[in-house]
Structure formats: structure tokens, C-alpha cells
Image (cartoon, rainbow, N blue to C red):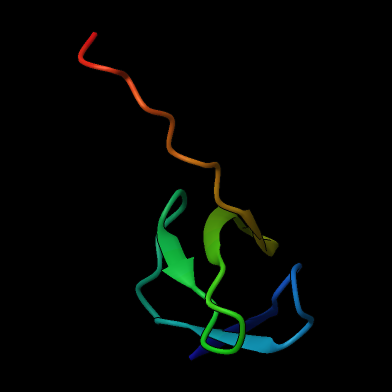
Length: 56
């Protein structure tokens, strides 16, 4: 299993072995959503907020 540090709380986040770029995961400690932005090197960032489209 791969591991990275949560940019929000600093906890270690375990990623599945088959993780793919742009996958959204949650930190088990703080619950923030993280996006895998790079596989080599392995890097995560805070996932972008979903915006309302208001029916457009």
C-alpha cells in the first residue's frame, strides 16, 4: 500500500495499490477530500470544491 501525508492535517493517508491520477480519496483522520495529482512522484492535493450549476 502507498502512503502520503495529508496536506490538511499531516496524518499519513494510505492509498490503494491501484490508485490512479485524478482519483478522489478521503483522509481517514480529518475527512477532507484529496485528489491524486501525480503518481510519480506520488502527490495529493486538496480536492477542488464542486460548484453548483444551478440547472445550467
